[in-house]
Amino acid sequence: MLMNQYSEPHQPQAIVTELPRHNNETDICRADFTAGDTVFSAVVTENSRCGFTFSNLDGFRDGLRFLKAKGWTRQPCLGIVLTDGDLLDCELADCFELDQTNIEAFLNALENWGDEEKAKVIIAMTDNIVDFRIDRDTPDSTRIAFAEYDNFQDLAEDHVEQGLIPGLSTETAPTHIDWDAVIRDLSQNYFEATIAGRCVIYRDD
Image 1 (cartoon, one colour):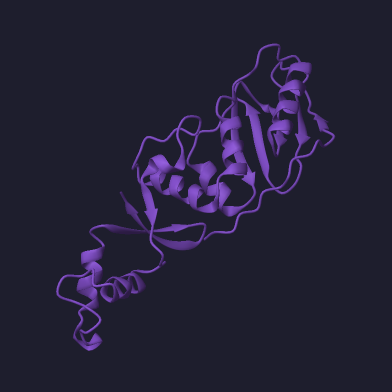
Image 2 (image 1 turned 90 degrees about the vertical axis):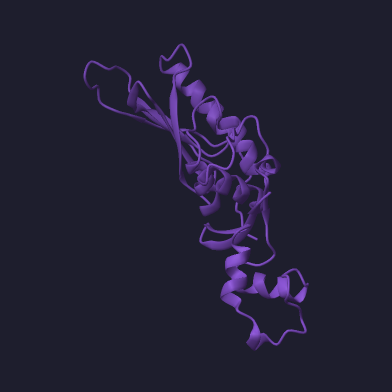
């Protein structure tokens, strides 16, 4: 349904930028461990001038080692955002408060979920259908089911052709069908959403 682009991980060499001292902070720096078009930014919450960018789990782990080498003897709290990548992946990332506790599960989801599974979670999180945790739940737990069509008119015509609308069938003259009424009826059980610029019709089963 939706095209997904995810780069295969590899081990890049870090690009380290030393920053000037500020407010008595020492050895402040950033590092780049990105590998491909997907770019996450991880920032130390106690010091927003310190952090790293990465694209995959290996890069994230390299970033943690980098911070440790720079004096963070304990794993710091990180705020993580997806700053560049596939539109569907970016919308999925916006649904979560990513940090060091759930980034591994999120990266696994990006690699292993299909576009439809990602879209299900985006809808469930956006519409508060379920309390979804990336490190615990699966897309199937959202109970979202997509219709074959991406607009209500086609969905209505399909229901009429299949005889699913009481009092209407393929024998009913199209000019005698109140399509607005059929669509209103269907909208009691079907809903519309725009995911990564694409309209989808879904049910919450």
